[in-house]
Image (cartoon, rainbow, N blue to C red; front, side, top):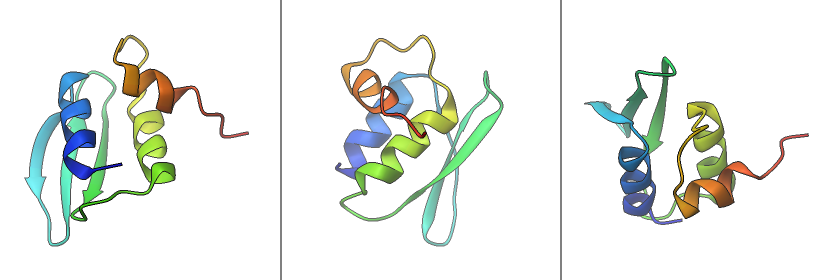
Length: 75
C-alpha cells in the first residue's frame, strides 16, 4: 500500500498528525486513545497497514479501505 494512501485513510477516519520522528510519522486517534508510527517509505507492507488499522480500532469507519483491511483476522 502506498504511504500517502494510508495517511489519507487514517485522516479520513479521524486520526490526527501528532509529530515527526526520526524515521517515522506519528499519528494519534484521540477517541480510541491510540497512537501509531508510520514509517517513511513509499510502500508500506500490507501486513503493517492492517496492523495499524486494527490498532486504531476504526469501528464506525465506512471507508472501503478500512473495511478491506479491518476484516483480516489476527487469529
